[in-house]
Image (cartoon, rainbow, N blue to C red; front, side):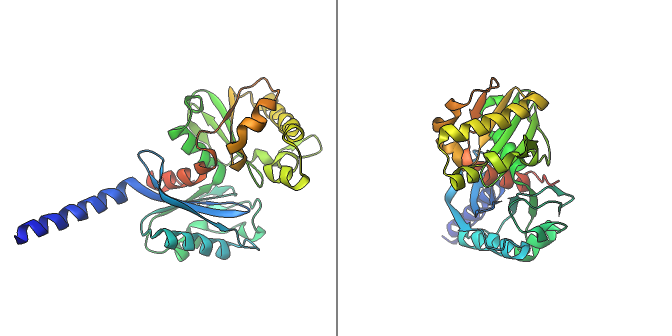
Length: 269
């Protein structure tokens, strides 16, 4: 009789280990919110609920890292954690700070998050790069074919350049000057909300930005993500640019999924 109980315990332990191996936690840090979920790495689907906490203000490294740790605690997760944030990340050093506090610049992000989430594997990368990687893995076939520009419209405009599904990391095309100002200062989703622009008026701004990107980079397609991609039917058809514009398959879940992929596949810039 005891042998049966032991077998049950061994099966449970094996199932728990298998679950840990095929699941990872992803955290997506944005200018307005920090979001996290446990991700099934075979399917890209969330396991359980997504948790979102407002980004602390000021969005300093330790304040944001503690918010990320709180999300991990609420998820009840004790395994590896991938984290993406709006910064150029090279050798795990944050080199820029877009829509977060300037004190991030020069921060060793691996050391930072390891202090707040000890005794586990950590990977940190740029948020748009993470979302682009997720779209390559689980999105439309076009993302894996030729030169594709993946853009996220949110507090700013994030970018990921992809060639046949391979990432050129840490592009920051939202900061490119289009006309007289940065692209994201005229065509981000946050600008649309702040200026109370209709989709028609905002689409004209997006058109102007995409036209400049197309002139310089000649992608075969744009893939657009971020929160506003959930309403792509309201604005993508209003665009007049010749280059195809395709809503991201994963919508605004891509950052979380890509962050989890980065730690699962041991990818870190």
